[in-house]
Image (cartoon, rainbow, N blue to C red; front, side, top):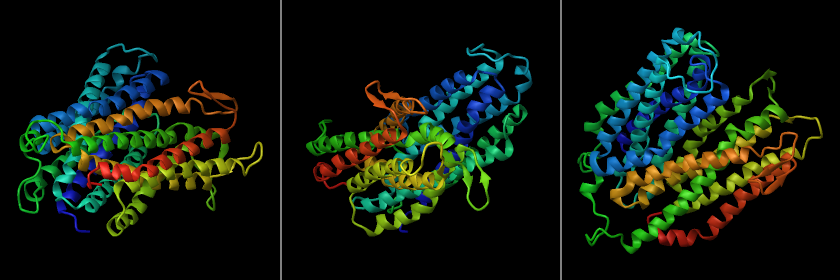
Length: 462
């Protein structure tokens, strides 16, 4: 496809980290309930803190990379901490017998297993905060100026590999740990350790031979602060062009926030919707599935559709701004599907699961047009010495979106009328879904309306 081999090796490292991380994330809540004997509500609360901290700390990881370490050292530092964290969790899980007599509780008792667990969470947060942001900011260094389409395609490859890892994690968890087996969690975390350790080996053995420029120069060795200045005139001030690009970055962060807010409904309101209003039986084989089954559709569709989008990105002269705008419009289309679906059934009837498949298909099209493209756009627009730091800010929007998405999900009208943000009354599912549909179309429409101005502000970069 015209991409350096280093791109595929970086993406493979990211895939193995993704598998390791989602093994950790997939086990965490049930581990706290089954082994540490926290209450359900306290476990989910701690999960939110642990999960959110890995994104909030991205700013720190990005800044340290730009200022002191460089991408290679920062990535190795991050992977090493994740390796240690998975070993800590596996060791902690091996102590399950020590907690067997502990009653269910909603506060930290600071027993030995709980202390080890908290240390593991802290180590994991540090590792992920240095890994995710800095492997993403490494990608654009393999390309020369004027290769915008190749960079977009490269981030699509990167995103595909990450989702392959994300798909494998829950399958492995289900096979190895199952449900409510305290003695097996240690082996689940060991799978996470093996995956990230292999990722470390891939990175270490690839860096000297493949992480080089087209001229044979090593990439990601020096911190960006040493190799670039903030402005061409050397004053340290941002140029007019860089200020214009920063304005576009702000718009991209807003677009990312909107997408994440809409897409994270999959983990909350859409699961509730599928549980109560969808006939969750696979046609032909008549096999009933849990609502969580629909979460596996996202990575599956991404795996199948990414090659199509890579081909489109390589063959069509679409600007990144235009791609993002189309992706936002797909958000509106996705929720329009559910709005239309609720109009086809009478009271007491359940929807065919095909409607949820169609919703997921539209949502994944939106994702492939926004997430890899926005990540790619940040690397193109940010001043060279701030690229990792800006990607850190990019990932912080995920945490903000989670808070807003949770507030939206709390307004899901499951047989009762609700209020969205204590302002908008919602009395039916159709009203709930049409708000999201209109929101997607409005944001996408505004984006397309101002896309030419944003392209001009990007100074020809996008």
